[in-house]
Length: 419
Length: 166
Image 1 (cartoon, each protein chain N blue to C red):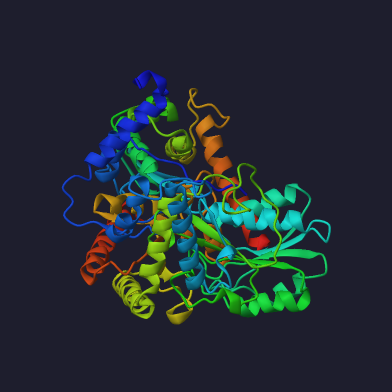
Image 2 (image 1 turned 120 degrees about the horizontal axis):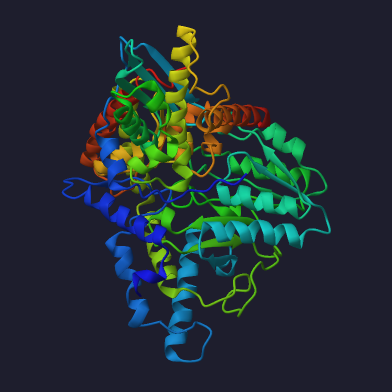
């Protein structure tokens, strides 16, 4: 392809990015903490995936030849493993999708449309992931009524308001098991019980992407009918995830095409990614306790280091066992988030921010606004997620870098932006 | 509510100005200071100008609660106006500062607009304090001043709406 086939703007953008990357040359230490938005995939997982591209099981799992049967075996055994870790009754309850976004779309659209003759009320919360909120917006356009349950200042959903919101026309409830931005572990079993007690026919969905592999979760023991899990959030490859659909729960398909091994998602199963997802699950659940404790230790070292070392900071979300073991979300007052992420990147620390400046409109993170953070507090927020692969030295390095970066950005801010 | 992220491949000049901004910091002996934006928008700039008897800008500096684009445009604006008569400084538009930083992603245009909004507010304030009204200074707000005002209002509305939604 010649450059002529891309627009001039895009070419300039590519050149600019190359320059930005050059500015990072020579970094001695790099720490990736933006697991919220994409992950680094451990070598063991990559190694587990590679054979499925051209050594074995590269066939279509529905076809009658050796590579096809190998693929069938791999996809089914992967589903079996994931079903076991999630606590499913059968492996058929696992439906692979290209990710969390697609699983949330399938869950909500699929359930709302399957149930539309019984009612058109959908209940969710103010702090759900963007995919859940955007599907809610889309459902609203189709004539569904959406109620968003408020949360307290640590992100816990208001169970009384939840109970009030459910009636005989409520056909779908979607509440995350753990919040993706501030790590709040919801009393999800209680919440779902409340829903079912009020209306046993309501389909309940939980986005468990930040819970799977991080907090104990047995889906069969909960009242969930549908649950989303994501591969990259447990350090598997991007591009795959799954929707748990409880045996007997009916959903409408939201995509049409060639049906393969799974009824709810057409198209050819992505065997290498699915195998990688299963391997990543294995690694997360093998030594589960140990992994969680390691993450918790690093998380608290990072939180304590920041709150102890830097003035005018606020931790977003709860502390201790009510917080997912990997989540650190801090607001640095008098500090703008986008500037902070760039400064940190130049020093080898990769994080994301709830600042409006990193988004298209002026709104900062809806989660931070929902827990009562002021706009300027949300603009100065940084989200980091630790993994079991991080080392104490990584956290020490991050603490040093954050401290310096905040000092420099606050130097640019001066007295401006202080109300 | 549509919230989306955007790739922000800032150009090398913006990156350089972000790393090493010129004329940064509060000016103790400023003749006039002005602010544009507010923390609600995620962008806020203070301009400090030291102006002599001949209406010439002797010194200019800024502070920015803002992103890299905001810091870069403010930095070049202070460089461009140094030594200029206020009348000539007024002529510097947001387009000129955006060009001077080698261009900005479209969604970041408002950062340059805000920088010039702050500069023009400072100039206007200077004449108001002096109780003077030079002919070249139109009474009607310029595009940049109007935009700054609009952005401040929008942020207030959004903040209010978000609070009432809670």
